[in-house]
Image 1 (cartoon, helix red, strand yellow):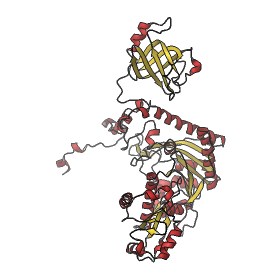
Image 2: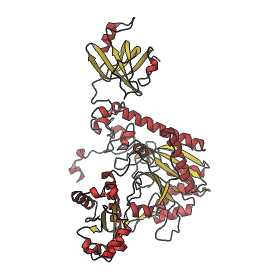
Image 3: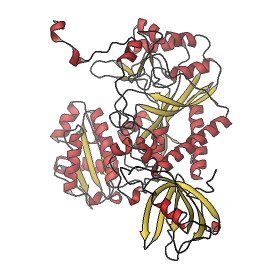
Image 4: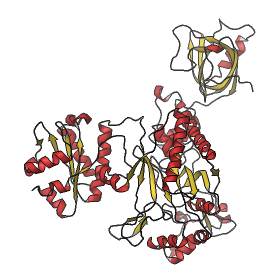
Length: 601
């Protein structure tokens, strides 16, 4: 290997050394016949200098000058030279190699580059193009420092997680990518079989059934960096294909699984940040999370709970509240404390918050501002002094505080309150973006019930062990979520290990006996051969890494992601395939434009 150093490792201690650097020409500039070149690779940038008046003996000035003519932006080059200290006053303290430069003694173009479609300098120093352009030329986008750091951080996270799990007796096992299509919530990606015409595989939405069968097979402690596929609409935190850290354990309860994840994150935190992560994580029930924060993944970095005041204002002769209460609704609200800048929120801003609430499904929002002696608002006249006194006590009101009150159907009020809470926190900057607050969402329900049809859907998935009798209305499930900063990082649960209980859950979800046999017969059979009590969890690697790096989208921490429409702009997929391939798979290909309507008639 000719390269002696990377472009990010030369320091003052290397002054006087002969070196060979290889990389991409990021920028070049001519200062009065002296050429300066920024040479970049995955490790950093080093400044090169060609000075015809200050060249080492033995160096061929003409051949160097000729080679430099081919040093177009982003061309790959090789340079030999001598490390020297930069001229006084030209140091670059932002660059780790900024105290030195390399005086060129030999230069060679290894591969000339076409003119790049956008600047590849540090994002802070250049204007990036739109995401579509970046994804179209992703191989160039990956040269940017921000992308390099994201992929290295991702690698470091996975490497540290692997180390912890292996140290604690977990075995990495690969599960199939071509599997049976089973209803797990999202749509499957389907793969046709050439060998068995008319039949199809499905790409896995998760390794759920296989990892449970590994427990039946006595594997005991399994993990996998699993690739998963879901044919659903892309969002900032979703992709058609994604990566999860998948874990399953035998002879454990929910706390054992949670303790394992907390230990893993403590280990990862130490490896990445060199700091101790405080454990155990806070526990919050699903019911409390919805009531206090209007979300099953609340951001706990700031203290802004919803305070329920239905019982306090139920007797107030305020027509809007009375209509809501007579329809079975609730009344709740927020106390935006003076120290949160509640006293700085003017009437115009309140009107904008009212519009926000309306767009999120409620008819409006009422408000009161706390003065030195009382509450001030155009609705205060509808409340007796006793009700106002109780309201101030319940909401812990002090002078300068602003009360924002919501009224309406329970579910809509809670969900809108959750959105309003998030908006207030962002607008008032109530949290530090560098703070990470973990918590476990526990005591989740087993089912979600459609209020119109009464149909049950699994709250997480149909393999969660029930914690209560199946005969009661609100069946509890042994499931839990790991949440951080308003995002769900992963879901876990104690699994059903009794085949008859599993069969009963399928029935409660409205799955017919025939469908149970067709889709899950193999799994029920496996449970019947001595399945141990077991449970596990899956953490979304893409989402967790994007949050830790404060990226707005998981696409910025994935090497080759799809765009918002699920397309790969780099290679043009998905795309049509040749008819001969479809014929080989015995799949009928009909172009609508080729159909003669008269033939159909």
